[in-house]
Length: 264
Ligand code: BV8
Image 1 (cartoon, rainbow, N blue to C red):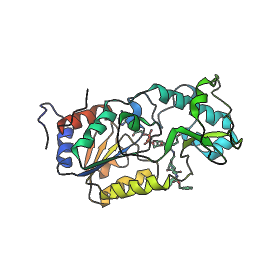
Image 2: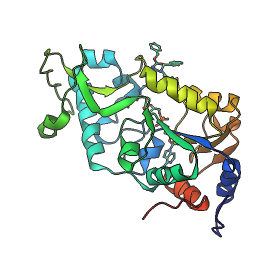
Image 3: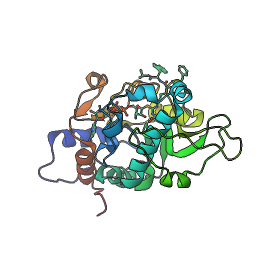
Image 4: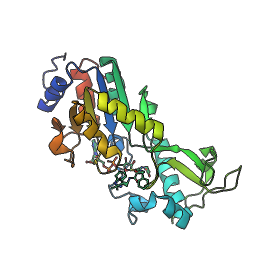
């Protein structure tokens, strides 16, 4: 099942063993998956303008209604940052790994679109997309092209534009705390995790629900659960393998060891 790559780490060898015979695999990813692309993780101190706020207090509808300029400015800053970054070798390794299994579904909490941009063919975005702006009242789609020219002042606060159809303020197309996840994506995520042979849990603090419940479905369904994260999490004691490595290092090593090297 695996190619002898000489100095493969112990964890890599154990991961290959746990994946041998697997046909259906799910990769559940969090903000740590994007860290090596230059996207700050959700709970790291947000760099620059946002050290003084708790992101979980900005990522709510109430915060947007209370101070639309502060919340919209934060998302404009993040949206612009995401436009400038690219997928890293870990994202491309998940694309290469698709060839090694009957099915590999990426279930991501990330809103940056990097899995899709890397070419993963089957991605479920549980928390929406920072690219999919829409109006607050009616959900009318809003084309973000015009946002490039908006000035981002020192304060970081930017009044949201108004919807061209109904005039309500424009918001990012992400799932805020207290909002329901997209039903179809969540239902399919629960199904594929419950039915998979192996679950890779990559770069998530396993603190945000209901996504943080998914590994329990995998464990209950008999999946081999492999956690790739330099830090331990509340999930770590229950996984079959904790690989204390970054996504950008572990995933390319895994795909090479499985004979599916990342295309140069
Ligand atoms: C909901 C979009 C129904 C916005 C985000 C139980 C059941 C249901 C709900 C709840 C529940 N308990 C509590 C709740 C409420 C709440 C919740 O979970 N709160 C938490 C804080 C306790 N959940 C909700 O509100 C959800 N909605 O359930 O609806 C409902 C409706 C009404 C009333 C009640 C319930 C909605 C949750 C979605 C929130 N939106 N994102 C935006 O992005 O601005 S969540 C946000 O956190 C991001 O999406 C992020 O991905 C996510 C999770 O964080 P992580 O991805 O894990 O990132 P984090 O920074 O925490 O950790 C990074 C990890 O990577 C670390 O472990 C680090 O060590 C590691 N790492 C770092 N570098 C690397 C690395 N790993 C690998 N390689 C590296 N290089």
